Length: 185
Image 1 (cartoon, rainbow, N blue to C red):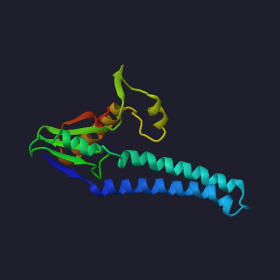
Image 2: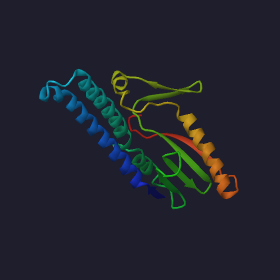
Image 3: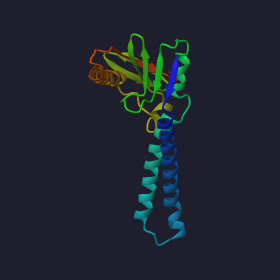
Image 4: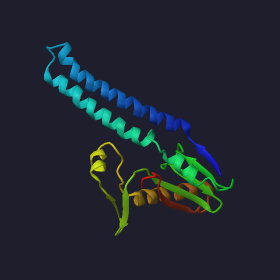
């Protein structure tokens, strides 16, 4: 199997996550230290720095959990599919598509909708349910949520079928597959 990773996109998103995390912590530090250095600074300015710092750092941590934290989804997918022959091509983070992972096969296209979360997940009554532990509930503010991977996978499937039909003039088969990539899932 051939594996193609858009390393530029991955590196840019990881860098943005790190910059946001550090910027938020710097703003938080400024909010705490500013009144000590300049006592005449009002509490409003201090509060603005603290709230901005918390918000920006939480956004950075959320993105870092997605783009930096190991195990990375592309590593897990490549490892799981490594036995496929060279007729298969696995694309990670294609730049012009609304999905993160696509597998081209001799039979068609497979959209791999990944969930990189640890925990227990159940599909019951056309709904996904995540069993929440206390730790997961506390981390949920800075980690991705399960959401509805079925809806996401089907939306990408519709998009890909439409675009591939426009490009080729043929009906290309696109199969959505939901994949849990975290070893603790």
